[in-house]
Length: 303
Image (cartoon, rainbow, N blue to C red; front, top):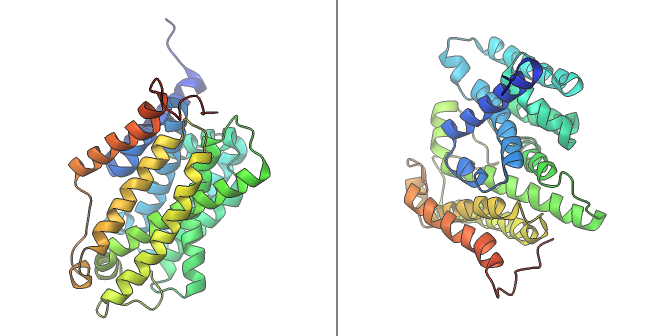
């Protein structure tokens, strides 16, 4: 067999690099992505890798390496410029950016989604507190657009009418928003103590109360309810992975609600790995095996 060379080999190595990023950084996201078909899984991994790369610039790794704030900002600007150029040309010397561009150019991801993302990343360098307006803009750029990018991967090659597409876009955005808000809540103390940030408008760590907690979780659970309703409209190959991500964060939301506000001010709540695996097994059974079982009332309905 002839050895791959040139651009084909470069593309392959770039995508493999993105896969290493998700396996190293995320158990929940990585677990859910394993339920996707190979092509889609690799595409989602390239999106995650770019997001993680930008996150690491603004969340302290660059500063730990000794970069001054102005240098950190220049690196973020350079990453955005490199991404924009790769979207136009299909090439970058940065393997993560190159892999993302391969996905973007094949699925229709454009600067309409990457520009808000980098705007939110830049806000982490410039803003320590949010107004309701800036919070909504931040969540859109840092999370909702990621959901929309993933949706474009799920729908690649599918014909979807306008009404269904609208419902799927809302579901993708609300799921992304729920993920981000859950992460803000469980990282409440660390974001404030380590990074000096307070994301939720009007919420301070020192005065964080049970009423604050339940109000935030009510909003998160509303997002999760809307996103859950759209899962059945996804292409069948994408449903198990999205349902698993939904269930993992729903479980985290339940655990946060069961934890006292005072404890959340000092403890990062997580879902233990054995529980994640149990949820994954149940989701896989519900959305794949049970639907395909002989005599199942849902078997044969998949599009």
